[in-house]
Image 1 (spheres, rainbow, N blue to C red):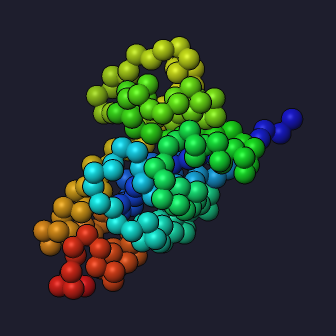
Image 2: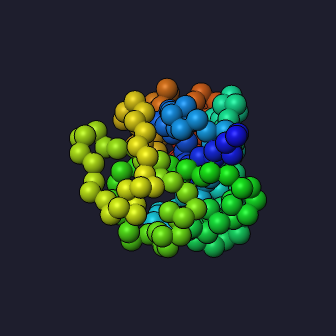
Length: 201
């Protein structure tokens, strides 16, 4: 009996996408034996409404540049269209309507610890397993049984790179080479994103 397709869902702002995202995604593909890994950039994420984001078209373009050599990587625009706030349960329902598959939703341990406060957590668990990247402390959270049974941990190499720090360094005129793929950095420079300005081109 052949197994069904296994699809990873990697949501976030990707503002910008960086090497840590790509390493995490590659590790998920290998460890979970995924047939596809969907990068899902959020247009209006529920938890980051205070900060102005780079335009969604630019974030999608950078993701496509960064993932074009990943044979199982795909960029989904499912949260990019429209102007509504993005919720995980709604996204997973839309994906399940498009393709019947076993879904794995990638998240960090910090998100898992806040999972009970998410919109419709029970619905999320019914639609996907949670693929969680633990913190470096080695301590895992104590979870209710219903959640624990739907969690699988993946442990990619820890890369101390964040989109927040990349934006900060770019505003200060500091280098972020090797933090993001060269082609993504060229896109950022060409389009003047994150205050990079012409002096950095």
